[in-house]
Amino acid sequence: MTDTMQAIRVERLGPPDVMQLQDVPVPQPGPGEVRIEVEAVGINFADALAVAGEYLTRTRVPYTPGMEFAGRIESLGEGVSGVQPGQRVAALGGSGALARYATVNAAGLIPVPQSLSGAQAAAFPVSYFTAYHGLKTLGRGQAGDWVLVQAAAGALGTASVQLAKALGLNVVALASTEEKLDLARRLGADVTLLQDDPERVQKVRDAAGGKGVPLILEVVGGARFQESLDMAASQGRIIVIGNASREQANLRPVELMKRNLTVTGLWLTSLMGDRQATAEAAQVLGELVASGQVVPQVGPTYPLSQSAQAFQDLLDRKTTGKVIIEPGQ
Ligand code: NDP
Image 1 (tube, rainbow, N blue to C red):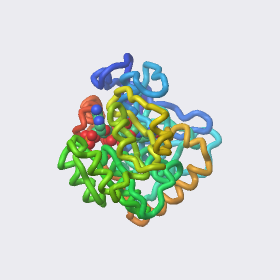
Image 2 (tube, helix red, strand yellow):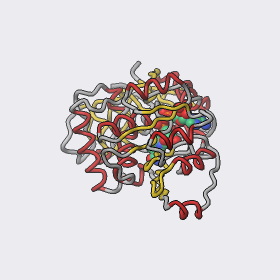
Image 3 (tube, protein in one colour):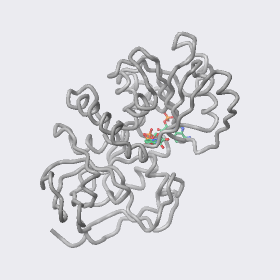
């Protein structure tokens, strides 16, 4: 074991090319922590927003990005029990994963079926837990209901389509290219539409029997948020999960009143504190992954030295599935 390792460092906030590869000390696991040899890091839209200084929480620099990762436990800090060196785990920490080794509080470890590869395990926690909470915990979707999934070929989108189908819902999928729609269809989407189709609002309403969609997972925001209201069925639920357009949206409360709509926000970070909801999601997701009914979608994979390119491709809408960075490559 050497004393130093390569890691991505961000010293000032900005576009992805502010990320630099540097030699840094290997982190020591403190009390209650484990050190993990990082196999794969899942890159989320939130990571790119954090580097830009546009995330929901303030980004403190200098720092090493990377909140979601998988790897093998390499050593245990004081007082850690119940896990073994060599065990493959997934982890959700605030940052620090874009490196050869990362430390994380043992409480943040997520057991993953050992059948998953490192990349699949890194593609799992954020997207699938968010999809579950959107569809079930907050969305209250039932088998037979229709759900609209935006950005359906992305990391959250592919998770949402797969999970919705596994739970018996019908899916209308929106995405920006035919290739992306093709992926959504392969994952089971019932109706697929280009997100710039000029008749998209009417076509989405028609797909769900002409009455609009009872459940919408809204991730684009801006002007598309208004469209989501137009696509929703009377008494429909719009779950606000993201704002990929990075544009302001307008909401006229009276419009919600007129059609008895519900708009609900979803932030996985705060929902993780709800033990009952997290345990329920973990149980359902664990069973579906173990039985192969949902398979985490590994997207384009990059070495650590190409992290800036990976982030840029995600922002430029060039990727499908979960963008993965493998620090060992
Ligand atoms: P994705 O892999 O889905 O990539 C983002 C996708 O957003 C793009 O591929 C693109 O798909 C779509 N998009 C639509 N408009 C734009 C735009 N103007 N610029 C860039 N992309 C656009 O990323 P994630 O799965 O990581 O995240 C998807 C969304 O969900 C994000 O908004 C993210 O912040 C949110 N999210 C929120 C969570 C929460 O806890 N609230 C947890 C996880 C994700 P297309 O080309 O098909 O339009």
